[in-house]
Length: 491
Image (cartoon, rainbow, N blue to C red; front, side, top):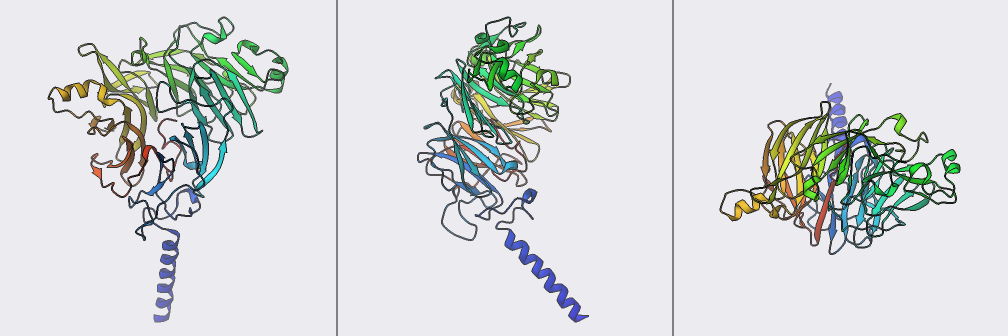
């Protein structure tokens, strides 16, 4: 009996040692989705886009340190990265990848989370520009399968597509294109025109193809290629390239009799994939009416090619007025949370508003006061919280109230409790340009005013950040070990 107990004890001890060897931090019992243990051994990593000097450091978000938990020095960083001015991170944890856009050199780098190093750099034939409405820049997108890259350059008046399956890149003419939104399946890639409007009943083939507000990329089938030879405006397209034997076209999106666009800025997609909701910025961007425009995604509206973007015959069908403004949005099931600003005639300034939309009924369930400024960061986190970031929050109603002596916070970061509908606003630390939800650990990381901060998702209290501060300017953050790609903010 004693011998058996001894053997059992040895077995248990051995099992514990194996687990401890696999884990470098105690944040999780095992690595999510059977992903391979990264070289650092850290299981809860937050990646930081750092400018001046340009680098991609990452930190251990369990211990909130920049070095190994059993060391007192050193610093984790993505090896081989050489981009200039990293601005934004498209976080793809399910693919163990991150796509980093560098605004100073127009670079796009894919970095491997599994290997913690640069995977490849992707050349964008038409170049990129970040000086556009809706900053931080959302004019480039890598599909989740990593096969296609879509980009817009309003300065050069072109859009670009990189087909990584064939190694072929194309540049197509489209003046003032500045934003890109792509659905999770990669079948719809929408392009938005800066400061554009489009009236109801504006149809492809009946109007000048260069006069629309929203367009879509389409990869042609072999039959369509043959029909489009030397015809850049094939079937109502704005442009098709290469003209000798077109592979890609950009088609306008028509509007039905009950739908229009007013300074469209981006799109989000329903969980079931059947509808695109285009955000019309409206008054906040110099327009008239903020709203959502719905675009059904059906088999008849998609090119039957079955690969790449396929939105050949998209038609907007309906508008949902959003009085509180619309510059960003995120789905939680059938509930759509829309962030924006509402004009206040009494002060001549804008006030931040979160509008809750019941999408099956297309009705507004509530509107709540949040941080002022241009909202472009939204992500769900632990404890039923939605975190919202904005830029230029010191130019709104709250700042004016604070200057007049009213006790009110006017920071750029909001924590919204989706269970109680209570909004908590941070003190002013500068523009909130990055938010990473460190799920399971009840905390988020932010980039505010160029520095890194950590908050509790339970009460928005600040956690100690002295061991994660950076020497340069932090512009974005991403939770590399998130369970899903939805742990993302501007994509």
